Length: 406
Image 1 (cartoon, rainbow, N blue to C red):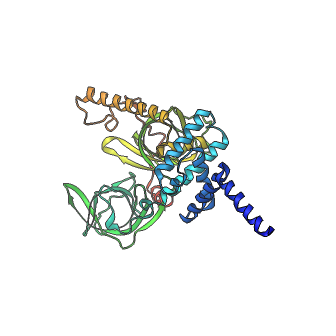
Image 2 (cartoon, one colour; image 1 turned 90 degrees about the vertical axis):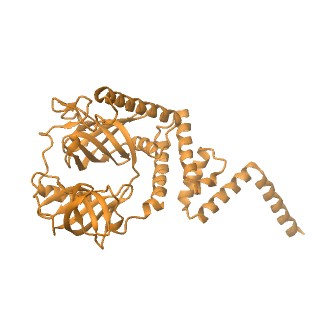
Image 3 (cartoon, rainbow, N blue to C red; image 1 turned 30 degrees about the horizontal axis):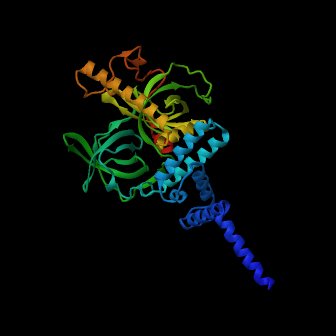
């Protein structure tokens, strides 16, 4: 008789427990973990997502398994809660945010957008910037005008160094390097089959190649932006954190931003290898990034350069602040402040355009006025001094392209 009573008591007790608040929680956690495993998540990821659901007080925690929108809203809710309680800057909470953003980056890169790269040179899009390496002669910049079955028609190549030779492009063997936005770096070897005019522009025809190598995948998510910043040139051999720069800061504009770098628009010339410190604000948060200029796109007609900056030194809380901007999960108050500042700056630029030009067609940023003291123009755009930035020679250009860029 006893062996019948014990199971009955166990069943009744278990039922009563599951109907209690603690029992509901245990059942909810169990269902959450089972669903997570069925969806292909690891136990570590499931544990992280459960923590997110609790801190963000989600009504439907399982939405985190399939909805990026729910995940981003949860991060925003967590940031808001941390700020309200004044605990955002604690080491524990910054570490928690770092793990959230690392997971957010992982699932972003797992999406088809980043998984699938180019498989053929015939897929290269019009407007793609490319670097052409001619061994023993130099490195040249160009841009795709048209991609057809005959080949890739690109603008007539422009040398990146004054020391580069001026080849007769017909029949020249080349290595073509390019970086596809939101994807990866690519390289292929081919030959220039001829010269012509395409859309009234002098162009070279680059033959299609059967082998296109995806040489370097992006490690972080970048977002386009328009953020004013200040650039400092640093001495070599220092970490740059507490260093007093040798020259005053130069105003510049960030065109895109990620946790490990940025594209910086400056006036004048630039070069690879410079160590710099970049300072700007996101909302009310000052950001300092220290690193190196890894590449330069010259814009001769506009007397500008686009610097490709790689960050080497970034505090965890600054990285998390940048990621909150990249994934658009800044707390509502901070986002409103940031947007108001950005819009007021854009309006001031428009006012200058209208007052100086009588129209709003050409931006002073793209067409800098006369330079003041060889350092800044009248709007504070960077004009990097020649004595600081020697021009790369041909040998260094080739090494940088092969060893650093790809």
